[in-house]
Image (cartoon, rainbow, N blue to C red; front, side, top):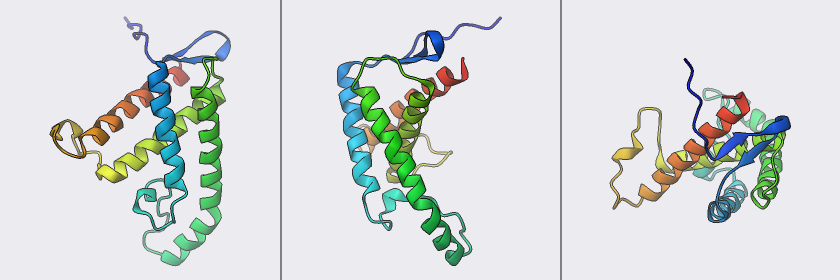
Length: 161
C-alpha cells in the first residue's frame, strides 16, 4: 500500500497549479539569497564560486572549452537571470504558481545549492551533519541542507508524488 506524503512547503493544487507554503520571513530570507546569487553571477568568470554554475565542458581541451564557454555562458546566464526574475515575483506573492514558475523556482534553488556546494567543497560522499556548530561553515551547511529539502519537495510536486 502506498502512503500519502505529508503536506509540505510545496504542494500541487487544483488545475495544474502549485502552492509554496513559506512564511513571510522564509520568503524574505530566500529573496535575500536570490539577491546574493545575482551578485555572484555578475562576478568575473574567474571567480571560483561560479565553477559549478558554469562548469568546464572539455577538461582535456582548453581551446574547445573556451569556445564552448563563449557560446554557452551567455545563454546559461540569461536563462538563470530569467528564472531569478520569476522567483522574485513568486516569492513576493501569495498567488499559486504555474508549472513553468515552479521550474524556475527549482532552477534557482539548484543554482543556490551549486554555489554553496562550491563554497563548502562538498561532493556526494560528504556528510554535512558532521560539521561542528562552532565551524564558520556550519550556517552554510544548514542552508545547503534546507535548500536541498525545498528542492526535494519541488521535484515531488512537479512529479505528482
